[in-house]
Image (cartoon, rainbow, N blue to C red):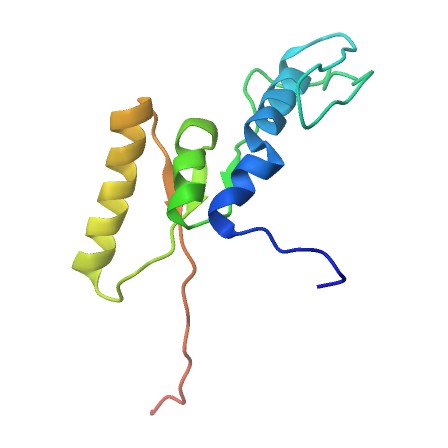
Amino acid sequence: MFGVHIIEHETRYDYAAPQEWIDVFKLLWAREDEFDYGGGSPDPQGLPSAQAHPETLPALMNADGWPTGLRFAAPNADMAFVELLSHDYEGVKDQVDRFRFMAQENFNRRLDPCANTYVVCLPTQK
C-alpha cells in the first residue's frame, strides 16, 4: 500500500523496537528532568518529563491479539486484546486462563484480557 512493503506480522515487533518505546514511555513518566534517550530505534533528544505525574504509570494496553503481541504484552502491558478462538463459555474461559497463566508464570505479572464482542438486536415481542 502506498508503495511501502508490508512487514510480515511475526517480524513487526523486531522492526519497530517496541520494547525501546516502552522504556522511553516509562522514563518520561519516572524522570523529573529533561533527558536524552540513547537507545536504538527511537532516539529522541531533549524529552520533557511528565512532571505532573501521579505515583503510578497510566495503564498500558497492547492491541495485538496474536501470539507475538501477547508475548510482548505480558511483561510490558497491563491489558491486552485476546483474539477469541471460541464462541462458547468453556472455550473462552480456557483461552483466557492460559493467557493469564502465561503472564503470571513467565513474567510474574497479572495481565487483564480484553476482547471484542458482538451485540445482535432483534425485534422483541410483547
